[in-house]
Image 1 (cartoon, rainbow, N blue to C red):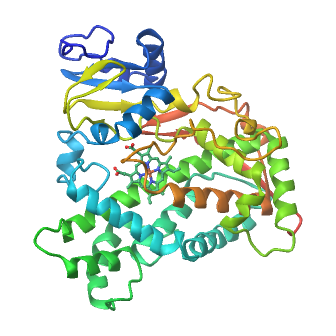
Image 2: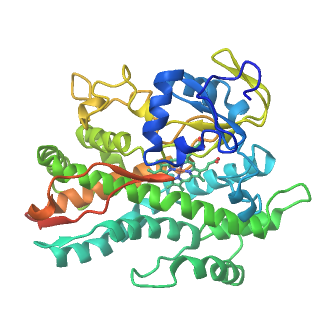
Image 3: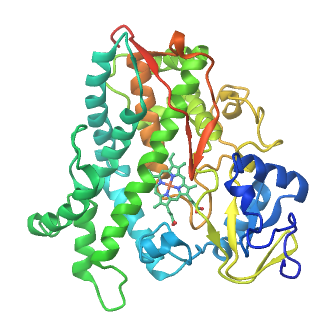
Length: 423
Ligand code: HEM
């Protein structure tokens, strides 16, 4: 039974509730249909658990920003919580341990590169390795899946551990996380942190009884940042090249802008984005259609609260339907098409509508937004400057349907690359 004055929703089956809507073939389409029937704030039962689904920019802003702290919890009784021992940052509840760690993560990200140039250098270093592979593949067809994963994985790896792994290294992450923590303790010089682990160990030195910092938390932070920061960005890159290959006129216009703005320059910097409105528009449009994290991370109410006049008790699980904002009619010039004009004004300047919310909003908003934006820009621009990306002739019609498994990703595809004249 729905609690009193709870948001409306479809009738629920015994035991399963409305679970079938979410585990069927196209859960995102189901959520959209339910929005059409029940409005921007509706409810479902996952088994016997009531869940509220939030849709559309207005309600999303009111819940996540205006009433942010009311909606900033995370459900604590999911299997994943048990597996992570209630540690880390992504699944942590809205409490002081989460707050302290979130603040620390953000500050450390800023120290290592977003404030200085080091993250940018790291992205270029990684691109250097990728370009070696691509140069060998010029004129041929390749699958970009692993390649994009390797770039984004190594960028975050270097930030966390101070090293990168070789692309053919089988052991990569699993072993590194444990070994690195131990070797860091031996090799670090206090006051001269090399990476995230060193910064965390410094924090442990300062630790007092009330502090939530611990070695177990350190391991959980490493896992969380690695998991949250790798496939999200890699999947967005895969979406970018799927669309760029199948919209050659958009690809060419990007290349014209890139050639013009970077003429005589060795390599692109993140600052260059201010002179590249079209490129910026394309990357944002890719993120909008990619809808990479379509249900965000599940939230939970931290107190009894209200939304659109409905009562939502403390402890209610909240699902954000991101597509309902990223493709909301009335918010976009072309909500259902891939069209960079969505981010350009009449003067051709880059503008970011409020409904651009792929990183969510409010107290739980993604902490990797700046890093992801920097990666997307530097990687797409560098690759488009050097190569032309072509949809292979034998690949048939492009399939833009995304595969949903927590995050959204395009179906595997191949791309043909040709070197452009030396830039
Ligand atoms: C295109 C790439 C990315 C997208 C679309 C994305 C999107 C999101 C979304 C939708 C959330 C949930 C926010 C909420 O619950 O309201 C989130 C959380 C998070 N993201 Fe990202 N993300 C991306 C890249 C990254 C990167 C590169 C990092 C690592 C530096 C990262 C770290 C995190 C963390 C730690 C959280 C949890 C924040 C918290 O619970 O307080 N993300 N992200």
